[in-house]
Image 1: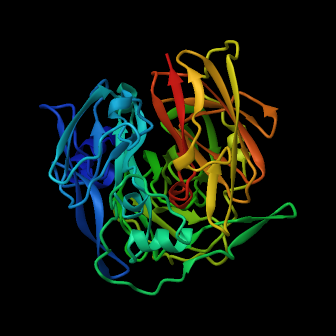
Image 2: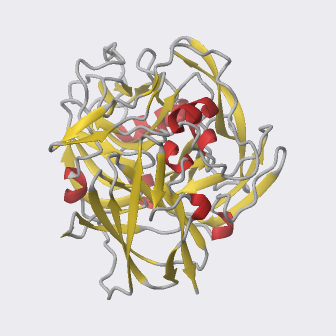
Length: 487
């Protein structure tokens, strides 16, 4: 019997398994702009059909994968019956192409809009910037490969996470916010009901708390019906064909609207090599925290004995879990319960990984021009979340001048963690609770309850760039402002 080399295996498997190596891959570098549609689609969750939203490429899958040195060239068509706007999370397009409702016009039903900008390599994603629509799964991977990726003797695997409910996103936000959700535009941006099937729904979880050194922090605003990995649950997980003893680059995207996870490799150690698309000095581990909107790139050397390797996402502070299974030919594929035996620890107060991360290419040293403190405040009752004491509707933007070295200290005075995302910039984490260090470069950083995180960046294009919490309940209840960069 002919033995395939590893490279031969990867080439052979890529042809027949593109949808599982890079789900819904579309090679946008060839023959003109890539076609994307904001649309509805039907998936199966726990044996029930559900109508959800999605960003579908010309091949019928989700998202895009770009070749090295490509421009991001795409034509996005809105086939929904409601307006939408799509953000290219972690990329740095001109502000006019950022996909946000404060500076970009909404995309009307039936309208097509072209995008064309220099793409940044790494693991990114695309999503609606309307909270209801992100809850409704209007999101997908955006992977930009490098020349090193193409040369590497390894297999690419994407793990894209969602939290899912059979209730409508509008019902979710109404229940979570208690009617405090903001109107992010003067129109109804609701996602469609999910298949018309309600299911049993515990709903809001005001009582889900976690002790943090004598203080009780709140976790998990909402109990979703399911937690999805590549649109599937552990009742019917995606089983990805891999090579026995081979190497995988696992690109994990937390596209969940309100849920933080631990990415768990079981007994198999992996090497964390990038966060939020930015290379870091490799860190070995078996379990890595992942807040909403963040990404992890983990290199995994698969077991030499040919055993299947589950890659699990464990919901923080609860028992729910989801994941995929990496399985060589002939491996026994385990059946895994969607519930662990005990609650998983909280991601929200654990900054161990963040303190250990180091950027492979840190920001160059230069004097500080502009230091800002940004206060994060809010509470579960009434459900209202603010930046510097203000909601989006009465915001006072954070000011900076183009070219300035800016440091921004997020000071969280609430009992919930906030994954803070800054548009149009890459920043470096340079302090936690006053302890200075040269940490990872990111676009989204988790700020624990009653704690501070300091980031540094060089202010870019003169424009109003959104700055907000990426937990959709918090964003909808007002936790969003602008970084106003002037010339």
